[in-house]
Length: 442
Image 1: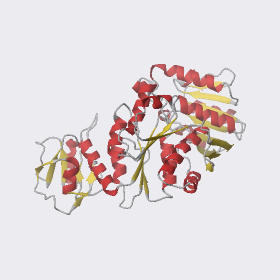
Image 2 (image 1 turned 180 degrees about the vertical axis):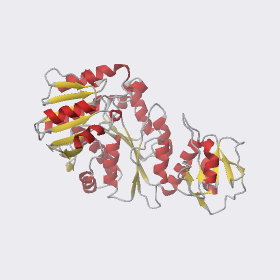
Image 3 (image 1 turned 60 degrees about the vertical axis):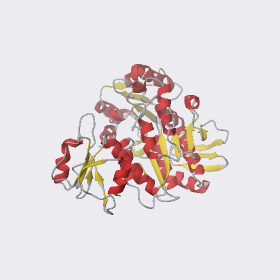
């Protein structure tokens, strides 16, 4: 992202407190928020957080070659700087610059949020839209304000489509992201119980996700999971499309442990991943693609080319086992979807390994107990659990063993699971289930 001085002032409303740089100067500047990677001639944007203040490193940025910097303190002026720009909030200034640059290029923008599955939908969406034109997507899971700025900064002059993922830790955060992304299409993948420990209720979660519609364009589209709470609060004045597995236009034709084949609105689609929840994810992609003017052929090709990303239904052959690692994150809805898919469509022998689900608030034990009850409708060789909360997963009719640590768990797996076993790993990210993969690989 490069902007000239006039554009910088126009975007941020900054006051020049040092320097005599004409707004007519054609020279364009790049921006950096990290003094460790700053380049000569960059403008430094010192961000602030709970435990750090980038303004303490302004001198480092200048010594590394920065021409100038933003500041919130009109007394913080260093001789080495060519110019100093005063703003009220450096993070907002960064968002304003990114938004200004995005509007210069003017890509068709799709924003995605949800309690779970939003990164999967983002990757599916990118796989579809890249076949229609030059497309930029959010980097990895960089789905906060800084991640949005970094994504917008990566836009190229010929970018036609922009796919952004929006995460949140509380109310108001997705509204801020929507304000500076200004999406043409907003997608709410779902609104489940993830983060209920922070937000307090399912209604508050739905409200937080619905903030994506706050700055949708007037000729835009809201694509939302058919959720009663979302319907209850939806006051978007323009077009809304709801999607669900109960849609009368949907017919699942074939499901294996690795693929899904389904028909939607008379057209056939293939996914290289299993699970009804992934079909539901794909429906949101199809609706967004159709509204953006893509053909069914382009959408089907993109969905067929999309593949699971690391720790999301990532299938690996490890020694004598086939392991499905779905441990990027876990909440009551996603764990049930994963268990249903794995236990319904995976051949025997099969076992599940479950860890703690995080951020579930006061009822965290009850959510894990419910997972155990949910398992009672299926059959498998073992239910193996590890974690302070996972010990409450105790299905009555299945052979369930709890372990104090992952080392003992892996030792049991190597000694007791049948050769050729299929194994599902599911837990929240903080459980570090990749360590199970590493130990099994030894």
